[in-house]
Image (tube, rainbow, N blue to C red; front, side, top):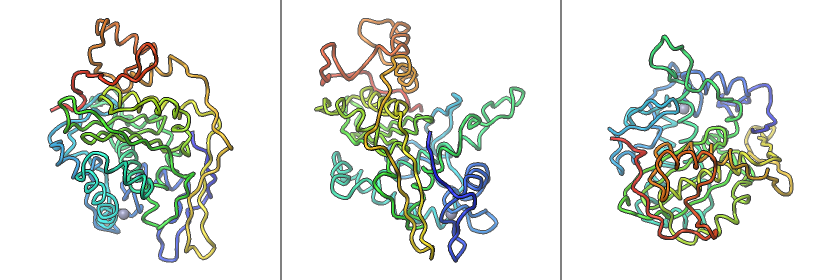
Length: 359
Ligand SMILES: [Zn+2]
């Protein structure tokens, strides 16, 4: 979905550090090799210690090490061993640059991440989200789709178009080459409060691969980020977000994530992204080019239904429906948890707790 103007050759600085990957080298080194996913060093060149995909401090705070997440092929994987290859140097820098501030913001309580973004901009939380989305997809490129080899050897990532993730990778590793990231190189990010409903400590996570969208819930804070829309998606659904004048239930939060993903899928005039490197290779700027105003396709109920079904494999009870009826109505795109029949935000929406994280 992403258009990018990229050189055929990888560009390195005087010390040999990669400033910009060619598509070919990005796919071969970062997506398909066993190199550090940040700097591209091979395990023969540097010391490695694998990086947790969901950061270790999150696993501690929500007691997730021995719990499972569901992979795109339906298999389960323990959070504690869900890792990707990373060199010690990049791992340490990422911990200092992103994990320490993010864990402090989380500890500061509800609203701290929103306040931080309003005051200091999206760079740290957005990059933190981009790194998690990237790591999850790189991991899919290292795991077979079928545990039973007789069913074939393809990888979970078989259908991914790695080139579409080049821009995401460039932004996620901008810190390592001290690149300046312009506003249009960022994507949409929405941070919002989530109601306890007896699940104040809950962790939740959902990805939309094609829509390059990630949703994470850390207790009473929800974050949705879209990585390749140059902030179009959030403008597209702003009239909807404006109506959310209170904390969201867990189903409402997932619906917001699905709607942001859908807005990105419906964006007609895609942005293009570029990286400028000064002739002395001292300055790297990552930017984006967009039309004056984003244009969106008309809402397609079926696509909305498919996107919702992606995040509601375990659907909570819906009033007036049997579980089967509720699922087919959801898939047909006729269920919303956010609004009542008059289009007003449902403040007292109180579904049963999520079952997404399994012990
Ligand atoms: Zn590295």
